[in-house]
Image (tube, rainbow, N blue to C red):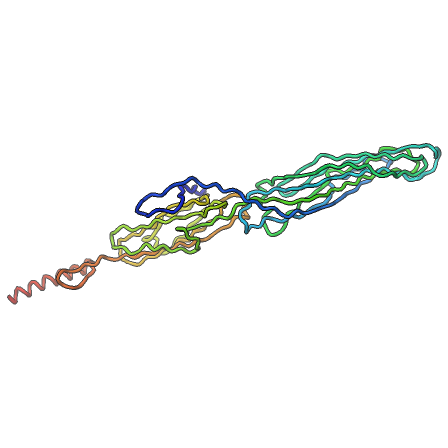
Length: 379
């Protein structure tokens, strides 16, 4: 069942109930607060090699490394957003080498060549980012029957990320543990393209990935319910003492404390006690903005004398924003008390009071009539 929106809303403190009106104000806007995790450093690598016997050697979806970042602490409030921040660099080193061999042409100068590439992907809950492929090529020159190993060719690329987490995945970032940010090579390739030496020729591609990663969390403070300005979980409202047949009511407010906090929902009301006599028009609501109030009435049926008490247990929660697992719930107990008395009547000339219940009034009438008759006999 959909809860009605919390409107109208009241701002500030109510004037006296006799005024019968309250000043209205526009809802106050809450601004998200921000907390950032500590950066986690990483330095990982992966390697693949290829010989001259066939085509390229490619490894797909190679795990290069992962980092654990702290989850959002729910005691801070309601998580409304998360961003993965990574500052890093990839370096690809390609080295083509040859071993010494036999055969003819020992004094001929030849060269061989090879290439490599790496495609990069970063994944975290609610974030997947693919980066451009980084490539490099290397050559090696020497005598045909000799060995060749003259160093590697390198290429580098900045690999930075500001990844906004999908709203549907925010719950994964709530808790006292950590969230895993993984780095992988969608493809890591080495290709020995030459075949000039009489020995074995090999191309090795080594990918290195280093940098830091962390998260930025945006959040709102938890809602803070108040009844008549009190944050106590137990609030008692005493309507007072009234005579039978007289009107009796009391205005009170339910509020959400001001500040950069979530809205307040009143989800359910559980009533007990003398609710047929001492009752309220309190009803469920949703998204009561911080700094706003709703006005309700407690009412008393004064038809019969008595002492009355009723209990309203209010089940409240943060409004339905952000990560559900970071929202809090609250229970407040509202107690209403009141007394109803019959009016006291003083009989003129007789110094006593009686309660004008029907039976008592009849007896008083008979007594007065008897006194009058007795006086007439004595005269």
